[in-house]
Image (cartoon, rainbow, N blue to C red; front, top):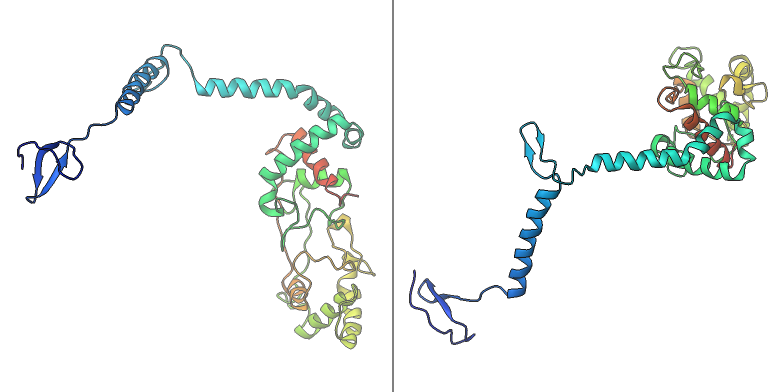
Amino acid sequence: MAGHKELDTVTGAETTGHVWDGDIKELNKPLPRWWLYVFYACIVWAIGYWILYPAWPLVDGYSKGVLGYSQRVSVANDIAAAKESQAHFIEAIAAKSAAEIEKDADLMEFVLRGGAAQFGNSCAPCHGKGAQGFKGYPNLNDDDWLWGGTLEEIETTIRHGIRADHPETRDSAMPRFGADQILTNVQISDTAEFVLSLSGAAGDAAAAERGKEIFAEQCAACHGEEGKGTPEMGAPNLTDAIWLYGGSKADVEETIRNSRSGVMPAWEGKLDPVTIKMLAIYVHALGGGK
């Protein structure tokens, strides 16, 4: 309710005359002048902004502003300027082979920076930001390559993918020895013991010896008689204790029983040839390229 104005005995401030519940009084304490001046200045600034820059949505567009400024045009100009400054590098990458690029220090620096950025965009979700890999996704820092680790082989893998929808994709199919009843569970267990023995990890010498004969009959055609793999077929080296899907006996048995069919996208058509070449050089330079 409204009452008469008076001085508050506690604060010494004048009241507005408004009283609630009989004894709650509202103090008349106006905003500081500096705050009001800033507020009014903001209003003036906002009106000026509305006049000069794009601000208000309209039925078929938006108000353009007196200056005709466009953030999109500004960004497009910046991108065009960046591309122009990089043009001579891009042309050089397109014209030179990967081996030639590695011998050019300035060009190599540009390629590694660009390759790292593109790796983060396209490859890191599977291989990890540091290319360390995860279970089912290869570590690109070591020297273990299913399809070969030379510059040309890495570029081909990136370009065509693995079991992808590209007509020239890398492709290999390991039989499902258990699911298709090619081997019994006992034979799979013995074969797993032999495979583990190739890297010194077997625990049952007798089982490994039995598995050796099965390996020779069923696996050596792809992995080689000594189990060192065949890059042309994407068959891994089984002697180096580097395991894509895990190196426990259960993991090896699962691989033998049901096979593995990892897929890597084909980047040809999604990325331009220069970017693919930059990626290949970057991956090769991580330390594991041959």
